[in-house]
Every structure is written in C-alpha cells, then in structure tokens.
Image (tube, rainbow, N blue to C red; front, side, top):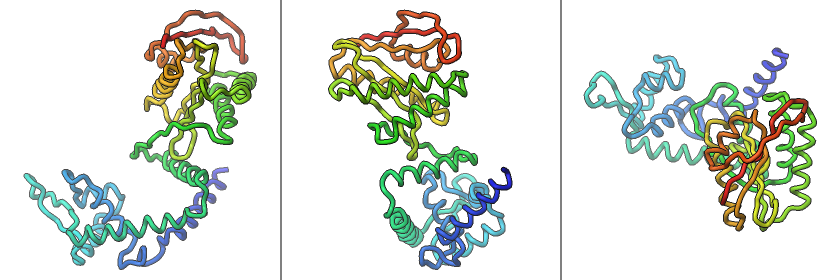
Length: 307
C-alpha cells in the first residue's frame, strides 16, 4: 500500500509540474524562471513593516542560501529588487521591490491569475469548489497550517444531505462507538426534514470550507411557538474555530426572526463539547433520562432556551 501511495504521489507531481510549466526555462512567457518569480512573490507579499531578509527567504522557501543569493543577485541586476540595511540593525539586509519590480510583479501576477482562470474555465462551480477543497486537504494532510481558511454558511445543495448523514454516522462511530442504528436515525431525521420542509419556519445550514463540508445544523418546527435544533456537527478539521457556536447562533437568530418563543434540543450527556456550546448559548437542561441506543448505554438530555 505504501509503494502504491508513493507511486501515486510521484505521478501527481509529474502531472502538476507539467500543468504549471515548472520545467520551462521561463515562466508565464516572461524572462524569469519559476524560482525567480517565487522570490518576487514573497518579497511583494511581505508586510510593509516587516520586509524579508535573504535568511528569511531561505528559511521560508527551503532554498540553499548560495542558490538564493544568485537568484537575488540576478533580480537586483535587472533593477527589480534592492537591499537596504534594517533600521537599527545594519547587518540585516532587507529586501524590497523597486518601482520597476512592483510593476513587473503586477504584470506577472495578472498573467498567472489569467492562466489559472483559463485552466478552470471548463469546470462547473461545484467542481471548482471540490478542486479547491481537495488542494486544501492535500496541504493540511502534509503539514501546511499557515493559512486561515474562511468558512461559509450556505443552504444545502443536491448531495449535501446524504454526505451529512454519512459523516455524522462515521464520526459518532469513531468518537463514541455508536453503531449503524444511529445512521438510521440521522437518515430518518433528514428524510422527514425534506418531506415536510416549511421554508417559513425551517432551515438547514451547511458549513463549507475550501469546497468541502465541515459542519451543519438544522432548525425544524416543533409547534407554532417552539423550534427544535437538530443535527449539529463539526468536522474534526474545523474544530477550535468557533464554528459550532457560530452555527448555533445562526439557528437562534433564524428562530427568533420567525417568531418562535423558545428553542429545544435533544442530545446525550457524552457529547460534552456540544453541551458546552448549548450552555454558552443560553440553553438550560430541563430533563434527562437513561436509555440504551446505538449500541451504548446513554443519558438523553432535553435542553431549552427562551427566544
């Protein structure tokens, strides 16, 4: 299996280097190589108050200092960058783009964006989100933690509800040992939501990041005065971002705007993180009973919050 994974990754790397033209002597029909353009990018995107030094660049890009020095020298010779002593530390040489360098980088950056735009033009919007999500997942799995990724809350699209049933069942099996009967319950809840959906008083939110689903929550009508919160979940990769709290707050705002006077929910005592979110949102425990479900002995709890 490891040999197959290695072969697949190497195959992808060959595909990607060909796709982006990394093997060409010059990039984007310019006079610059890929390493030179990357150096320009890093210098251009450094915070104005904290410009990079050659050592910073070598560490960030994992480049040999001698090779990087030659790259910087070539860009200096073209009048694109300059080195200046750092204020208060003359030994530190900070790198900045010249006016010519900024203009040249803007041209290269625009050409790169146009190239990617043409690359993804044949893809549907859904395919684009899946592509971006897959790329983000690759970075995450291989240790990239440098970029904060924005989470969007949106309405469900075809295929989302089946995925939510699948992921909730898998996660609760992995984290709490619940059996396949829980998947049946989630499927039933989702099926009833679709069958009896009333847009005037019910809604579902899907949390999406980089094209992938990372959470969800549902609000359904219990009676004219009461809304029920259902199926809150957050993927492990998105925990710690406040997403669970954000989903609950969105559901509460919706219920209040639709004229409900209270919201209730049913959960189990082992779901500690979820219960903390509910408590922080102002829910209070009003009833609990032991039961045997999903292959486990559990304590079911009913929580309530006035709106």
